Length: 451
Ligand SMILES: [Zn+2]
Image 1: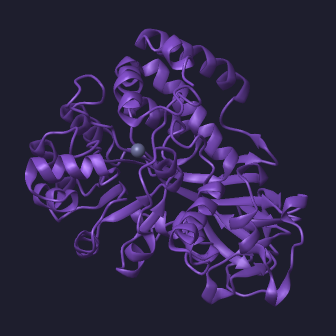
Image 2: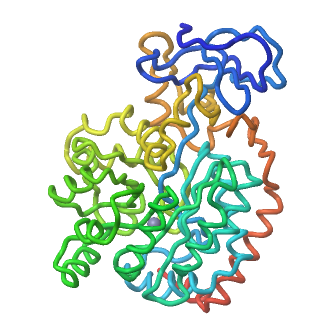
């Protein structure tokens, strides 16, 4: 079936040929045909290209999918180090001391590791909230990924995060500098930043037309702390502190009342749902069906490699579906169509990129991945009117099934070979810098004694 059409003559920068293509439902859902890219954008979908192409990528036995979008993550190094600890001990004895020890060299290694993993796993856009944002943004310039960088400002434990002044300075310096990289404000949470900090950041965000990303209502402890300290639930307190005139993305939003969900919806705040992190830290299950029913934009995030422990958005889609079906004892909630939308259009809208990326349509930025369908864990593959391609992507595929990753029409990985990051160099760098970081933080041996 060939549907959507576009400009399929003349010259092209890139043609992706031979695979299924996931297009918006109203344009056919799953079609077969060429995807043609010119000047970073998709110019034709479906029709056979008959012009001259600078590069042709083969998608045979695969499916061309919009690049996945990670709506909440921290680019860090500490994977599999501090496991299965009570939350407060994990935070105070390990997480905060090593956050304080972070230097730019550690952050560069973390950014290279995380961006390599995202390219390999089919994530084409992400929002990072962590330390030394210049390192993360500089790595994104060369990795080719689309990024929103929000420095993580923490004030309650001095030195554990960035400062308000550093965040303002970063946004001023990076605002408008790259087509692919946005700079946002990143107050860590209501309990770790001063009230004034939220207000000041909010005024700057409105002035510059950028967003603000924070953690909200992640744990019951947080709700109790904010409620006892302010007399308000977290969403109401956040609403009191910030301006309505800019984009807001809150991570987790696990413990929201009906009234808070209505408030989030009425303010147009987006939510980054991180089911694996919420499960791993024992924080609970976000009320995603209620958020969606209220009209809230919900994206999907992995959170960091400390609390996941990977950046695989295929796995995250699956977790997002399963945890709701389990909790609500209803197999019909969170369909594969809904969770796929969360990892693509939902996350993109949350980052203010809803009209730029995340669907394969003429005029969109060419952020695309090719997922191989020839592995046995994806069999049987049904084609035609009753195809099961989307179900296989959500319920059976893994990050390792991604063959090719493309951002803005640039091929960052083809057939499993990453072109923009030297994997051998990162492998060596990450081991060395992780050990250095944990040693400086004084938690190397403590961290390895858990269990
Ligand atoms: Zn987080």
